[in-house]
Length: 244
Ligand code: 4AZ
Image (cartoon, rainbow, N blue to C red; front, side, top):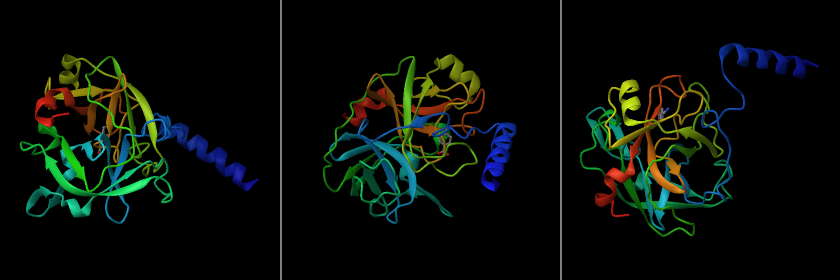
């Protein structure tokens, strides 16, 4: 009786505040790593989620440069490889018995990366050992894509900690420029028309178009706001320097 009343009150509060209890990534649905075995979580050595990524070779993880960056009082520095773990094959990050963890042997960040708003937000982690999971090839943008991650299900929610995915419409460069002044045509792409988006903790994670990796989650103003599409690093722009 008490529980039921609480549930009704919680539902009313959720409706009034505009939050949706079914959301995650934002506006998404549960996903299983078995269906997308190349998606990985990036954590601290004590298991705290901070980003996502994608296996582009058995020992290489594509992610965002800002995921490989530590902010300190003296400025921004590369995050030491020894402080990063890659978790593969684990739908629920709380289930340490599922999948595998790998140490990172080397971090490559785009040499021009300074801040997400300036772009070049791409990095490649070299793992200490190859992982036994299928990889994903790089590809081009299209009309829409699927973004995956373990991150927040709304701006004010904690990370889902279980993998989720959502389909987002990819906007034209001219529309992205109108909505995001920092947008760099050709080197970024933007996606989402409100309600569906990546959010904190999904950074570095994959945007998949026709089964290929077209982008990595870079930045946005909040999450899933109307007229604030999520911004991604457009991987096709970096293809020759990445070598994948
Ligand atoms: C973040 O804080 C973040 N809505 C990532 C993606 C987006 C916003 C914030 C895009 O890592």
